[in-house]
Image 1 (tube, helix red, strand yellow):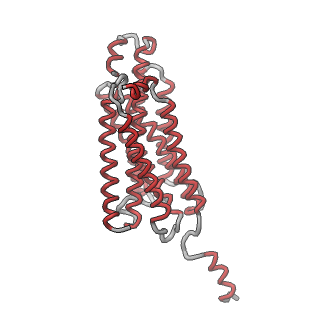
Image 2: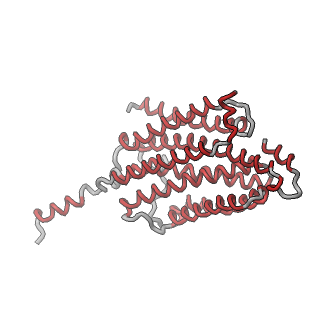
Image 3: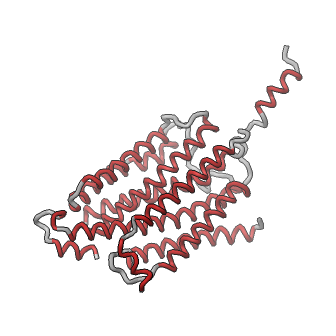
Length: 273
Length: 58
């Protein structure tokens, strides 16, 4: 692959992903709310096609184009799916933390719906990222699982977000659910910096964070393409989940029995729209 | 007594000093990644709001 093509791919994938995030935010405002009249289908299909194309290209680069690693041989190729998944999980959970804090500062169903969406999507990426890490661990460490600081902290964090989602399922009152889950979300987030820095703070079996600065330059481009593809997917997932959460919230607040007695129904319903 | 003849099968097992093979782990990882993303996308489609049909009508 020529240097020019590499540069085009590097810049092109980054621009495409960041533009998709921008479009995702715009669609979140214009298309996601219930009864929106915006026709988002062409944009959504374009974003999905772009994500799929970049993901196929990134996976091909990871499986075929990049060289073997000096010590891990070919097994290291799991990095191209494991690391982007973990990055997306952390990104989603950072947004979840911001939404949880934001909801407690200023009550809004939209913030609550975005918190719900980010927790679920973050849990998806984090869970399969952890499974991929375990698969990578077997040929390199000789075991699928070890109670090392990074793995343990990550597992605890995922359990707390499972608790967050469970809480949201069990509490029927939308107001109480939003407040309580915001508190749980903030508590759960405390673990995220521990997960990130655990490989630096403790002598860990897990290697240091894989970033474009810590991996070989021959592997950087493939890692970036996979990460940008994952970012577009993350945006699409969040957008659709946010839209579903908003519609659910509107349906809930439209039902008088779902509301606290001191909150008038029509006013709360209008906040969702 | 260890001779070059007895060492060679041992060295062959050690290989080139890197992990050999392991493609079954790589395929498993990629398949799980794609399956996770595909199934979640499907779940989102199945959970889409009922009024989603307004997209196609307007």
